[in-house]
Image 1: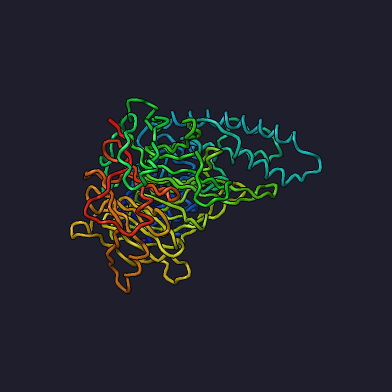
Image 2: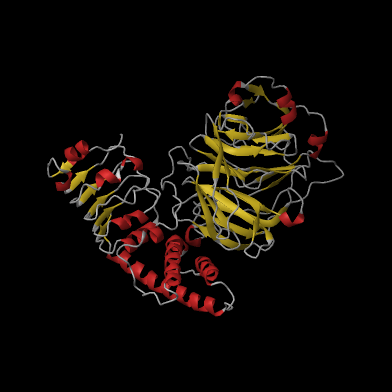
Length: 604
């Protein structure tokens, strides 16, 4: 569908007329309209329009100057709307339909109620209860912002510049004034910004508690762009029942110390804590919510690349938890209703404080079902940035080990994107930019920058095998296909899923999925040396490790490079532990018999 025409409007308008100014009802549903197709100059000629149907199109936003001041009924169901603040241009609106816009949240419902005081029905339901909730929130927020103003002004010295002080007040109010549940934080911060700016503009005169302007100014209504959450339904190709149910673990059972010297028995690993912090409503009976991934916070202060702290981030269901491993205490918990988190990754950014001091700041990226990357300020406990990365679920993400702001995201849309998230400003706001797009032939499941040259190549374990891309930024192409596909032994294994991938050191890769019951150790350098100009290369296998003979997928594989250890869970709740120091220092061992684990921590 191209731009709208006056002829089309007259064809689809009621009553039938040869003049746009006489049309009162207009049906523009199902025309595959994009936001840019809504020409304000043309639509503003519909001076008597009272009912407009824009359902079943592809609108991401509504232009802010459509000029339909008499509009009473608006239908925008089944679009891609990500912002509702432009609805303030319809002050007479009484009925509104927004069903099927997957990027809108409960906070948007509250914004709609605030911006449209004459609204009686939303999505066919009475809007009075939401309106009452908004009035209650508004009164409390107004009271809290006013109290914050009085406290803030009392601390100012006479020589401080008034303009700078007022800017500082708005920032501090947005940062410090909190009220209501986390699910409404987007709305409350939006209102706090507006209330604090009104206070500054009025010189501190009390804002009326229930002040709900019929038409807020465009400057305040559209002040804070909101990131668009992803779809509420899990894509059809996201497996729901492939990972193991929660189990309770018993004492560990130590296996034969295969792969280590006889004089140095393998370390005995014992569980310290059992947590169920991702359960719905913290219910111990919830055995369905899956824990998809975990990542240890790097120990940046130690100045040692690769060192980790005792703090781990876990994700599953609608929550991301940050846990102190020594005490078992959940330090922070971030929830995003309607989300299902699949992956987390840490980075540390060097930021400059308002006082001009440089400070290293840990940022946690979390992503999942809705295709969004949320950048979490862990210590403060809030989301300070959202990247609308993909239109389908994000399976995994990882930061570059050499560029702290470079983030790879891998999605069920069969794309891997490299982002530069940038450094946040004083308001903790990020401005991300897209650097590269890597196309895959199957869904990417695990990402792994090549340890010896992380700025040059990226490995990915995919549903259809293991692939590699050239990710050097000095190359002209910003969209690239796979450079090399790595093939494992046997025709059956060559195209199988690779759902586990990790570098054990600068050369040795551990991968899982190509052969049932085994984890493969292979050499990156030897494999790459034999590539030549081929697009398909057989990996040089160093050893195989015996693992569970399960058909189930997506069990995480991890490596501790400094310790020469590989770990992987299974469907029975066991953790298989392999000490591979000898393999890393010897010539390839006979490949006939996969090596048993050094140890297994077993569950029921």
